[in-house]
Image (cartoon, rainbow, N blue to C red; front, side, top):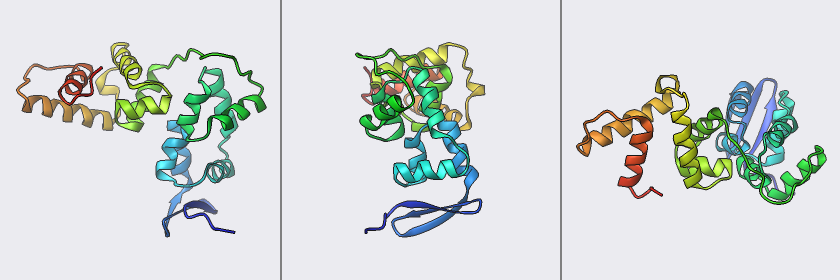
Length: 201
């Protein structure tokens, strides 16, 4: 039987990450904190390369209930396709989990409403409109509209993460390099830079 090339092993409070023949030991809190903040196996997988079952088993070992997360996300209105991308799994697996957890498979496309926190968390995790849209299972144009809406609904720049602040500073620097001296909001800067580099609608 072939041994998985990328996998996780547990020893006490330590998670060993084996990737391409190399091993790294980290405290399990890093795994749990990343899963708790992102609510996405796809995001966690970027740091902890392992199979779906290996990841879920490791999370469960340290007390993280993945079924509980899915239960919450089903109640929040996520479609199977969106959850499949969010967790880097097959849509059929999500559909089976939906049924096992007692949620009906309603025909058609369920309308999904994302909170400001979910929108910004997806953007912070992915670092781009395209990546964040993929995490939420929507197209880039729709995510851009949601992102601008989020910025206009009470989310102040000073309350954002340091990573977001750094992105804003980088956008401002690029704008200055292009001769833009007026102070712009992050939404205005992002829209401007999208137009400059062909990422607009």
